[in-house]
Length: 312
Image (cartoon, rainbow, N blue to C red):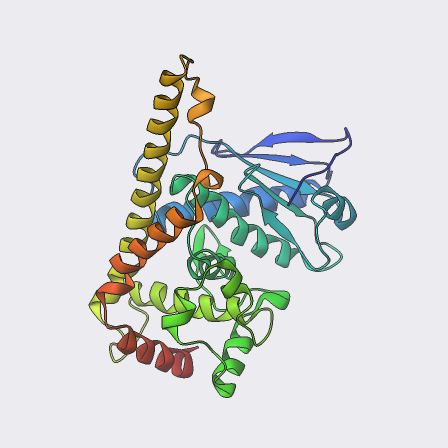
């Protein structure tokens, strides 16, 4: 998304934890209180599920438009979108969906807030889509009641993935995990049979893994080594990108020294756009080898299939 110009009727609101700043042109106090409560509760959940090794000091920006028109113009956003996160600006952008369903706005905000959190948690790295979007939908389906985060199966509105994955199982149109998990972004997005099938299959995999670690999956379908998949994947992903960034920084320093130039801090501020496709592919392969590569994938697929068939 490429943000456009906005008018001057905006204000900034710091959340109680100071982890977020809400930039908004909405004057609906009740709605904004719910936005703040939801994003704070979502962040607490992310930090519980994926705790940072060191405190994250970056203050994340959530830009909230009071209507869909302003939202659409700001990011040249296609119809149907409710919110998005931009790795380049690091903003989370959404609008007040009062004319649609505010519960959809809140759920999509949690989904996109996970992308925003991971951007900083994993050192501006880029994960496979099954991890990113599967988790986004997993967290987006949570309910937050009386200070408790309660996992659910269904995001509101058209984001409920249960009917889609069930239909895919009836049609046998889901992809073998040996393909789906290893897809690049384009392959993942275009796997079909519908434009949301990729989301549904990835969500069901993450839901299986997260419910399993919570002790909510039958022992007939769950093996203890499955609990290591996500931790090992994220550890390898983060370290792989960290090493790649360090190599790039050393190259920048060497080049500057050879040219008699001074290295400024800005020259060493790197993000995923600096990583070559070849290097990213290598990092992804290492992350997959450290996680799914350590289990019997055929056996995992059979267990996942039974879970979707019997427990979703």
